[in-house]
Amino acid sequence: MPDTLTAALAPVEPPLAAPLGLLAELTHRCPLACPYCSNPLALEDRAGELSATEWARVLGEAGRLGVLQLHLSGGEPMSRRDIVEIVAAAHDAGLYSNLITSGIGLDTARLAHMVTAGLDHVQLSIQDTEADSADRIAGYRGAHARKMEVARLVLEAGLPLTVNAVVHRANIERVDALVALAAALGAGRIEVAHAQYYGWGLRNRDALMPTHAQAMRAVGLLEGLREKYAGRMVIDAVLPDYYARRPKPCMGGWGQRSLNVTPSGRVLPCHAAETIPGLHFWSVREHALADIWASSPAFRAFRGEDWMQEPCRSCARRHVDFGGCRCQAMALAGDAAATDPACELSPLHTMMQALAEQAGEAPPQYLYRGRAVADAMAQQ
Ligand code: SF4
Ligand code: FES
Image 1 (cartoon, rainbow, N blue to C red):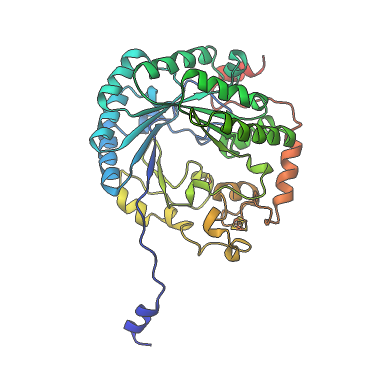
Image 2 (cartoon, protein in one colour):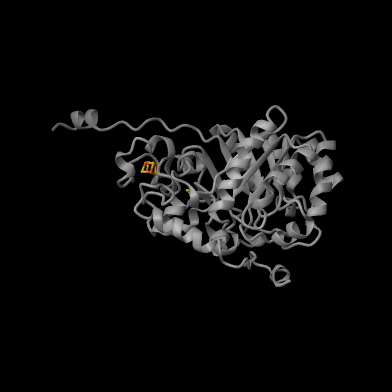
């Protein structure tokens, strides 16, 4: 066949849309030690972190690439002394900036500087409604009281506030109280997310997993609460995968909507992508962000549908959920290209539910992320 005809008959890839969001993990340092932390088990150290100048270049590239929203995360982003400089760079790049924080390290003066620099939004994590339990989950005494104060400071500064609440066995019975607390704090939105079991969460799965009855009760309560708070506060809920019948469309599809930049500049399609062996992640220190988005081997690995196996390959929902979560498939099936076991069409679905039921009965004993002081609190 002549080359020109071969080229004409080759499948045409749809044009690649720009990413909507960029999650900037400014540091893995954090005063808290939550047992479901989304950071990797091997935390990056301070010496390797991108400087504020490097971040400014990356954020400029992100703006030109079409990114709209920047999530300043960590670890704890307030652990960066140059956070105000980074916020200013985000503003200059035309990005809507959202600070995702534990509240520790955020005071009136620093908040005022960030507002002046152009910060748009604050997302504050809450561990529980009761201080003793919240501090035990965070592995940091006094954290809860500080968070209550920080919520007030955020509103006083005129910024919109979202409350993040990760739910698991220790707090799931109080999901309605968590929503009420967010409303009382003046949040415009609460994100109630069931703990995700990768990295630290997977290590702590037995201690974090709620029972099926607890999870279903929480799901029902949240539906009613959405109606109750309609028009006053938005309630977003991430459902518990292990008790689901269909998987979530993780990340809105691998490499389709967002980028995640680690403290030292490696660019990942999702926060847990490094749990998948064999993927090669390009760094912003060596490549332009636009090149990484378009051509990085890690982003191309599970983009589109060519990588899919049955039953996803011929399933009508493959455009809806993209086969679920690649990291969960890796963690449970040992194959990142497998159907997410959260799907009832996966041959491993029953095994996943059995794991959840067993775990939901285990005594809660946390392995905190990387800190001896938190380990000591766990024994109390
Ligand atoms: Fe989604 Fe795959 Fe399950 Fe179909 S088989 S619902 S595409 S995970
Ligand atoms: Fe990595 Fe879902 S967390 S694809």
